[in-house]
Image (tube, rainbow, N blue to C red; front, side):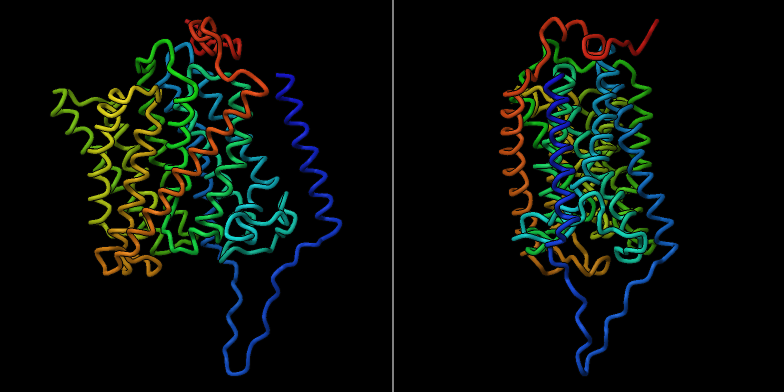
Length: 447
């Protein structure tokens, strides 16, 4: 723990020194407005829209709700009773760390400028050049930055569901810092911040590659390195918490997807209805598939199908029509059921809460199918295979493969680095006792 604190303090010192240098020297050139050319009409300056701003404040709060308490309750209810608090704490601390790191340098590196299509610039560290009247489209830039912050936070928190019941809390804290900085920030820049995938024309409305494939692959690589738990059975300690958490995730996801329109308009409404439709269809697809296989529909199955649908429609929400959303939801519910119940047991990896089986697999489904069903009548920025543009499907495939390869390599390297400073796994005795007691000296239920 002392090593972790020392590392964290060193990071803060480096950030402070770097920021002071940037503020003092101001040596990063800023783009200048070009004067109007003869015979051309000057582009109108963007203006603040109070309706868009009000909606985006609500959408940001909704996405924050997805991590704490939504994901924390969903994961906490699925964990063993002796590991509930540790599981919740992993989501809580991920949100807190991401909140600081995003403001410190994450937003700047993801969304400020572009260096070779790989990463942004450091000139907006600690929001140094984000003024009270700075705009991103029709909303304040500071609001856009915190909206994006909530995406970074939930992406890291999602990964924790694969690692629960065996990872030291101190190792998780260090992993969160390194993974968000070295994996999430670059990929967010590649897709949303003007990086090379954006320049290729990759479509990701709200986070299929940036959030879900990213988190799912990191989950898979991490569990392969961590190894299996002593008891790999998934026996939820509190399905009521699971249902409440899943419902909060569905509710918050409207901010996630509809908010990604960054305006209060028809596109936001289309993303909203696509999200609801795909989620409902995926939940039904999972339920009826499970019902046919096991003869019993379960609440856990319904909740899992809901999450699969939410994940799959995320990259496509602002690009597809209602028929596209139905097909994406149906395929996500059906395929993810088998990825969890058949693929995982056959391959033998211990993804505790099926982060890869749901988020990784459904994210891949949604990202690829966006290249098939993207309808220019919904969003002129996207035209898929069915609308005469087969190249979009190839572009989506490249974006998926790039994300998988980069995330897998970097996640493995991060684990290797952490091992230099500390043990990653708790001891066998600590795992048997439970991480609530061994890591936090607390109990979730004093009965």
